[in-house]
Figure 1 (cartoon, rainbow, N blue to C red):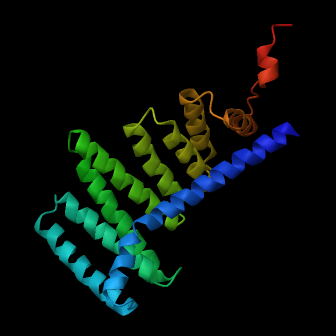
Figure 2: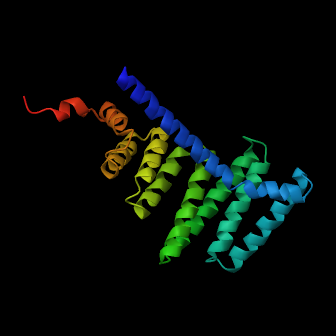
Figure 3: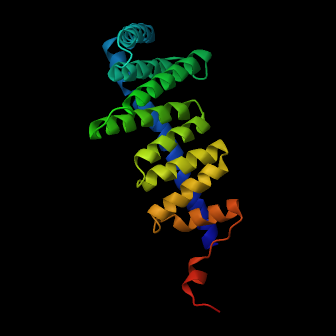
Length: 219
């Protein structure tokens, strides 16, 4: 019964983690609220302004293909316009795909830059990219992006936990196993450590000792 409660808590935690990722995707949409307020709440006016901004940043990246700030702004405005589209529509999906493409372009440019500021900006860009992929329900691509995030932050246990959760949603058990194993290595005393061990055992065929059995001496 205790093990069942641990498992319930484990799955509840990571369901909430995925919900947090989805909500993170909507954080990028916050400027849209302000934009609506300035335009009197007119969706048509919002879309018109976004179209202008997209055209502006498209011109900017054409003029300077290495302009990271413009690539990021272009991606952000596509994400904002996606939020103004009908949910599930082809237009929404197309705008989200464009946002993913341009966040990816910005992240690639930032990978060639050195320094702490460039690294942090790249991490922020990759997190935005993950949020877009989660909105697209493209968990495999989100998992791939987490590969870059964890490479940049190899000691961040939470990043590996999030990677494992997204990989599980993508049906990528092998990646989830690797990520959960790394998570336990970085945070062996995590509150959900035993539940994670149980999941690893159930999905790898390798049994893991319970705290009671491992605490005792040899028979």
